[in-house]
Image (cartoon, rainbow, N blue to C red; front, side, top):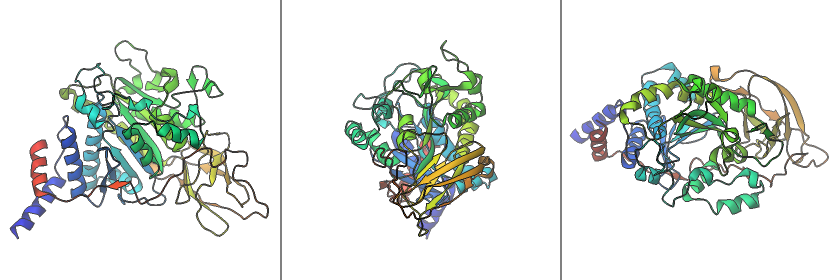
Length: 448
């Protein structure tokens, strides 16, 4: 009886335990994530995507996707010496769980309507090797000396699956893990957190000299949405929106920039997410100093806290729904295209037959194409969804065609772009979590 009482005591106590605002090493971080997941199994789920890359999910159904609930992710510490992102993401987890448990309406609405994946560090080896200097690059690369944000297959080097798979064979293990992760979840919106500047950067990061080049920028078909997303973060941040430069560098109007206009980058993660995983991603540079002094962390958390939350809400922009064939079965790989937005890889339905399109309020013409069915075109009036914690819901119902209609219908054929999502009930490797009394005692000693 005494052992059971002690266990219940630790569960109750640890659930209300706040995370100390300081740097935590990789072992401490993993211990914290295990503790949060063990203490809050109804709203959190911890899993690994390999290479000691731990992801904590927050949501009403944290271990599994629910149709109609969008998938969101944050990735931190991609460059091991740019460390504020991992601190912010751990604090965000603590903040969301604590306010949810305190019955704060905003936290309950956000967690109940969204599945939020948080990967605090993508480069744990780089973090271990990092120098605490503001500008030095020691720790930027992984243990093989590779910059992970130059190591993704680049869509401007070719879109065909064969080229992509050849490129993937050259990727670092951390990058391969993230690519596999993108194929297990239908992520809709994402951001990766960096340091060394104070700006929200949006795609494209690269170009090939085509129509995407407008002036000095490389503009995507969803540029209006990307600009909106970047402004949401910058304007919600305490100072980013002022466009103040770091260390005498160029200023950023409104605190945002097109990635290519800032500097061209090949092999970046945000272009890969957008083109091949149909997930809109920003790069958030959240601190001028790559490794800020611990004394500055409380102010930096306050500066970023609201921006991190407001950005998650944008996953509810636009339209979401399913595509059904003539037998009323939800179908995967149906093309769902918006007039005037010629994506390099057309957006398709996932393994659940779902589509998500982040769009600003307005009227849009949708064209849905699926083999053996008539091409369907409908015009939708799209409201602003984040205020209601939901995008507009709209299902498309197709009619069988008496004539076999090719799946491309003027768009890229299905085998040109490999953005198929493999639905397998969550991540590749689920963490086996147990409640360890000794582990809890050790953890509480670490952060107490």
